[in-house]
Amino acid sequence: MSEQYRASAILEGYEKIGCEAINVGRYELLCGLSFLKERAGSTSIPFISANLRDKKGKDLLFDPYRIVQRGHFNVGIIGLTSMLPDTMTTVTADDYLETGRSFLKKLKAQVDILVMLVNTNRKNYESLFLSAAAPC
Image (tube, rainbow, N blue to C red; front, side, top):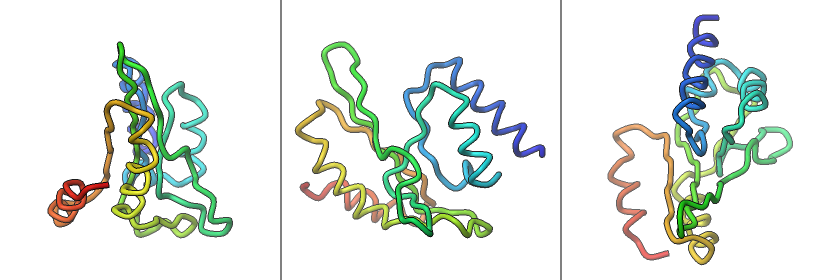
């Protein structure tokens, strides 16, 4: 229950500062998928994830990205994670590097700036940076 209260308070703070998107990762999934879907439906901030899927239906759980306009620029925001809670049995994650590269290719002609929000641990930083440096 305290985790749910904490998650709700953080979401309220994000709304106040004007976040454009929330990348769903390990910490967002800790209170369970039904709670997360409920919170996603109660806010104007889009929840995104390009690689989280329903284990049964294989459908993406959220929109994979969002494109926002800031001034004269179109900004693409992609959400990815390599981390799922150990208790999460209803969700699966596609390879975040492969998925990220796929969406970079898809969006690069549509946007001026690409932002990739990645929920991962420190041991994956090097492979993330090497993958980002490779041409799309």
